[in-house]
Length: 275
Image (cartoon, rainbow, N blue to C red; front, top):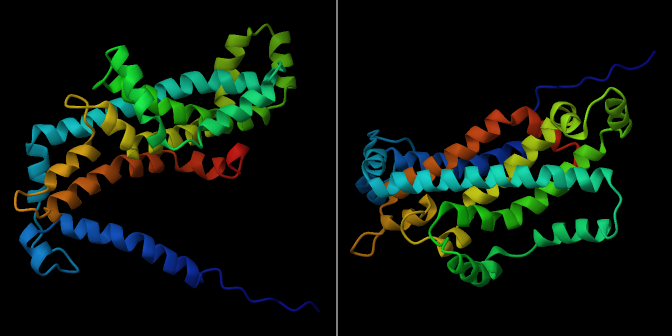
């Protein structure tokens, strides 16, 4: 008679619990510092925010340059996402379905571009965008970020498109679908998980990247990451409360995106090129 093996499904791994604690502890402390007056945060910070105060958030939303910083970041990130998907989807389809001279070399070169540190591109980007009068515009930052988001998106999407049998293209052609109709109505719904993963990586890069964004903007298009430097006080100190509140607000778009794409990300990380 086979021995019944007793298993405890509710048991949590200690390493998982430790990792979770180390990950969430700084975020919790950031939230605590943002919800109490700055004087308390400096002198004797509490484990729990006491008294709870929204003065740091009120300060941020009462300053036009702070609000503009968030708006600027969201605008060029949205432009970057649109351009990235518009370019990488047909490019990934071409790499997946067509055989042409230099295909493998071009695909490899596109991925190698993603390995270039952003700081290296600052001087040529500033000169090129200055020549076409695009400095301090959202479009300049979005186009610069495309140099890094398009290659990784092509790499991800090509894997998802290649997982779709080519026989589906042939069946659609027999049924009278043009290639464009097949691409929009049949293929895109099949790879929506890959599109979600590519959008996630593109958003995260563009949202957190500040080196290029700072170099290509002066006043009108400054992102919030650069505006956060204003927390420095005249006496050389740093306003911990405002800085913490601004950091929490910077985390929220990414957390919202992860929540909205959670199903696609869970599947996408085990499929395609991300797996």
